[in-house]
Amino acid sequence: MDKETFEKGLAIRRQTLGADFVDNAIATADEFNRPLQELVTQYCWGEIWGRPGLDRKTRSMLNLAMISALNRPHEVKMHVRGALNNGVTKDEIKEIFLQVAIYCGVPAGVDSFRIAREVFKEAGV
Image (cartoon, rainbow, N blue to C red):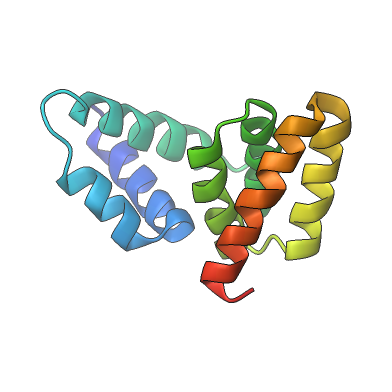
């Protein structure tokens, strides 16, 4: 593991998803899933999210579209929160999920809207 890239990824992950969420994921990792936590933190957050080519808001918008298209509700919920932290507005999230509904399927769009509404209510948005 590249410690520097891991630490960079950990900082970006905390800023986007919230320190409590990330710290809990790291602290509760066991020998089975610790390698996944390290992989995600180093490569996903450190290598990719840490690249200069796109800002975090744009990366969040892309993630919402892709994860919604894949119909991954747990990840959609987490990344809606992260998108709000990265400056994506409620209206922008609505437009992303409308786009997903047309190009990737209405069920994916419907689920994503439902999940986003839950997050908005929890976040007071």
